[in-house]
Length: 62
Image (cartoon, rainbow, N blue to C red):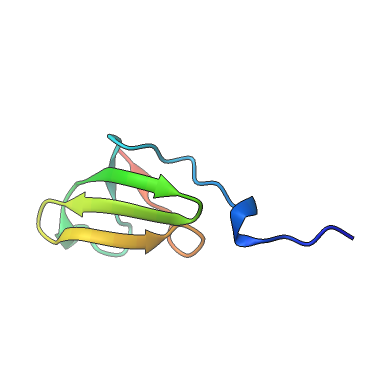
């Protein structure tokens, strides 16, 4: 049986894409800075830089 590791997860997000957090619309639009494995760094207009776990939250691409 093959063991699944964190490295097996790959986010579809790419640097430069614009997104919104579905649970925090007050953060405004955000631009993806990096997406490595499940860690996605986004710079939101009203919240600043946030590192998110893409396994937990599904960002909305705009």
